Length: 486
Image (cartoon, rainbow, N blue to C red; front, top):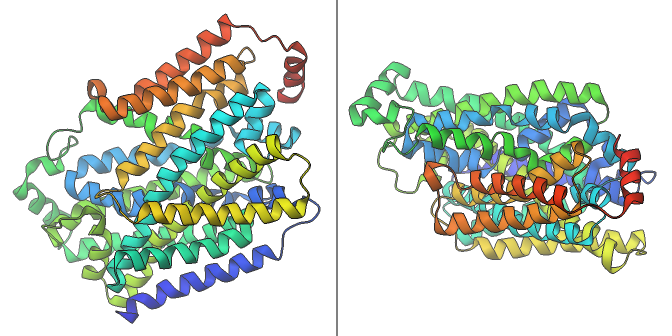
């Protein structure tokens, strides 16, 4: 085991553990356990909000799977990845003030709290909860795999042992500290991600003899590696454009991102986060994916794409610096897992247990169940991750598409279109998710587009047509919606 590389890793885990302990001791009694554990008492400032969005969105696919795909596809994948620059800005611009104001009025702790109040439907809540649990389990599995592979590359331990180390370190501080621990650690992790990206990009360019020399090598190997269409021409203009929906516009429908729009302190913090988040996401996406492409020159013939980033760092940097840099993908993975664990946990505890099983449960019982469910979810994901796929970015993107098909219109049109109702929402979720799974499994990349495009269009059509055809009978509920959502 290379201890020069491992010491920064161990240092990160120790810091995060103590942050979790600190956060657990600072749960604000005046805001209540649920508000603090799942939403951090809505006190995020601009910089912290930006870093939590960056760290949550930047994941194993950004630091492990994304560079691996760029290694295979060339500069075309870098162009595709840069679509994600608008993520934070777009989410806060669309949801922003209105979503936060409504969430405070109705005392929403989760995204499904908003949907429950907006549509007054048990089926909307249950279908939304099931969608979150299914697709976020897939997304968390991708993160667990990324963490296990990263530790495996650094330590030489078996994949299963590495996965176990990662799972234990995550579960301890998330289970204890909740959202407050996540927000604090994600700020640290976001900074690490930014610095790590800068170092690995500089180190890779120096090792390759400069950008012109690297480009010449890529052209000599295959001129298509420097084209916008990928090494095999598969990144067509239509396919690239469809990714604007998957990782650009559609991220409004991701529960782990949307919930951030509930948690900031005031409008000034939101505006700061829009600027900071856009700059940081843009730099990280450019730096990490360029490094993945440039790695073809320095480390040709890598067979497992997900190992590109750890191998590259250890090749072009001194061991101690490689350890620091590789804390960046670990930070990205851990921060995403933090948020996903809490989203799934809140869906089970707050949206199902408290809404429909035991609404009068005491805070002590809720606290115990919340922590137990969070721990149990982590254990189940660990078991799912024992047999990983070859390229985990596709597992993560599958989860993205499913969540977007389920939630984008129920959230956005539910917020801005008064005539949308529970019948439209139910139809949108069922048709969106059903068509997504069907297309993904039987006819992926239909008409040259990503599998998510048609389901999102189908779910929009279902929402609008059904809402217009089937009128809402509960007029008193509509009056309540007008009061709270205006």
